[in-house]
Length: 341
Figure 1 (cartoon, rainbow, N blue to C red):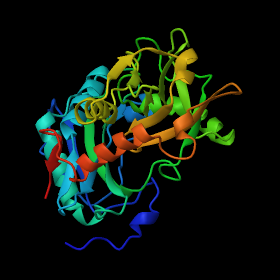
Figure 2 (figure 1 turned 60 degrees about the horizontal axis):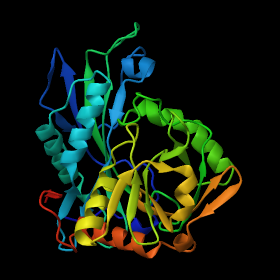
Figure 3 (figure 1 turned 120 degrees about the vertical axis):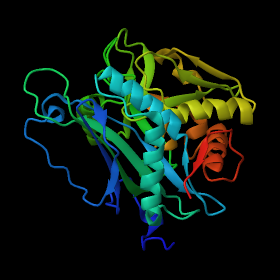
């Protein structure tokens, strides 16, 4: 199979139209068989529920070319489970887990020429998503839905790749107490857009949000979970009911403990204590890990001394181990890698 003629090393994190996408329709209480289609456009009624009341959720995962030339995906079962949680919270029908994984395999295989070659630094990003499709004017769930998966080859999420970034403490809340912060709903990301645009205008790469109840504990950023490293090499990550359960973060916790022999702690982290950490990193499917140079709290710099010029040594070990697993250089835990072809 011949790869597309693309300058893979120069790819940013943006949309590039590929050949096929997967779609399945829910109507009269059941999902149809689903199919791969050519048309990237969606035509729907002006009163579709997703347009009126933002009834939509999504996922993100990647396909990789491994060292031996295979094409694989990473832990799609967890994406299926998380989308199930999101769908239930938004009163949407669940797309079955086995069908989700099968759809991922189908769409990756159909776009195999778009999966970047091993060693290029790029990957094929998959965006499964679901939305209410039929016209709804009263405030209620839709009765018809589409489940779709699009693919796009991508490079690093943040410009500069592994260059340490600067983030600020946001004055806005990412989620409400007992709200939808722990599900991957489109509306959660819409709420963060004003804050991220303002952050970029002020020279910051991202926002870090505090807990919505007391605004004293670190939660996550607009698009990623965060991890911290202590002076004695312990990995600490925030714990909260309104944090999205990042698959990358959960994988890193396992890698830290089982592969690197580190202590791992998941607990509430007060804003006032983050200056005690020596490394920090944003983690998620898109970025894997992006080192954080400093957090700025309303003019006060809180630097991470081991991440000033490049990834700190511990975060680099975590990054190298996880990406080594994803790329087939390091043996993966059972079930983490799903081979497509």
